Amino acid sequence: MRFSANLGFLWTERALPEAIVAAAQAGFDAVECHWPYDVAPTTVKAALRETGLPMLGLNTRRGNPGDNGLSALPDRVKEARAAIDEALAYAQETETQAVHVMAGFAEGSKARDIFLEALRYACDRAGPCKILIEPLNRFDAPGYFLQTTGQAAAIINDVGAPNLKLMFDCYHVQRTEGDVVARLEKLLPMIGHVQVASAPDRGPPDHGDLEYAQVWKALKRLGWDRPIGAEYTPIGQTSASLDWLAALRAAALD
Image (cartoon, rainbow, N blue to C red; front, side):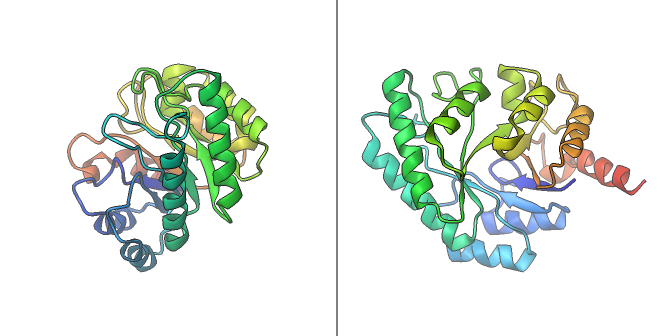
């Protein structure tokens, strides 16, 4: 198995280029980030080239303080499209493979229609880049428009774009729905990226309510060969939280 360091959670005390180098030194196979826009894309691209790591994904901007995305908000369409344009341009310059279009806090049929329009807009302009949508659990993000994998699957089917995929975050799915392995199996054809963290505490994927030994087995059985995103909150320094990765690497050598 291969893993990607989510630099929105790991090595956050470092500037993004330095965090990319740290991820490479720790043995990660890729990186991903949240909102890199304060760093020049040329600087990020240089760090990626130095390390040889691909950037798997980044997010559209959240919006104003208190927002958590814009693309399902009926009164923020212009801002949402500007955020999509910005994310796609940054992804193109850094050769980032996917953009996560964040829906925001909204509900109802009007919000759904607006979100579908935003996703069609993004998919039409994405070029080689994938567009991702991610359900967030109702405990961490109450009021977020996209909350379940079933809701996401219906939206993906309704948009009907081949480059629109599901970001399957095992932590969020476990908190909201459970049955993570069964949902991985069912939704595999539309999954574009997998992320992991323990539940319910969002720590490293080596403890908690979700048995990751079963998740690893399922992903291997299903033929998942892309890097899996480590999006968890380390206690203390990131380097001290990587025993789970070392154990998996050692097991692979046995």
